[in-house]
Length: 171
Image (tube, rainbow, N blue to C red; front, side, top):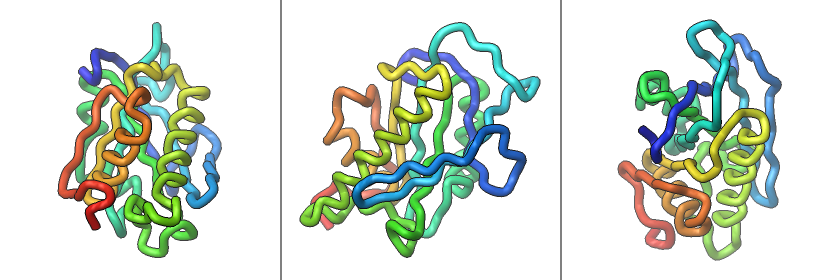
């Protein structure tokens, strides 16, 4: 289980039946789109207690939908009962859709991490998320942003996973 938890599945989709409103999280140097619906066996949910949350960050040129498809994390979330969030970097913040983890000198990396954290908090206000059981993972640029988030906010994440990324400050 994810940091000792249970849960349901949260997907992000732009072009499929939205059951919840489109959310836009704006920060000083970032804009993150969170559109999602909750799917459980009966397209509704009944939950006793709070659920762990896994934040999955896509790589450059990808979308939240892409990382959901390639990771197949939704299947694991359904089986092991946790929430999965797929934030998507808006092209306004980065033309290639990359997380700005590498822009440490001008503060955009830290602002992007803070905006992602605000997105986690926004989702936690709408769904029964256990903020003590939040993990972050990513692929490529998403991996680098995941590590940066864990480094900047170690008390907010119970785990971090990185695939094919580089440590912040090395590029």
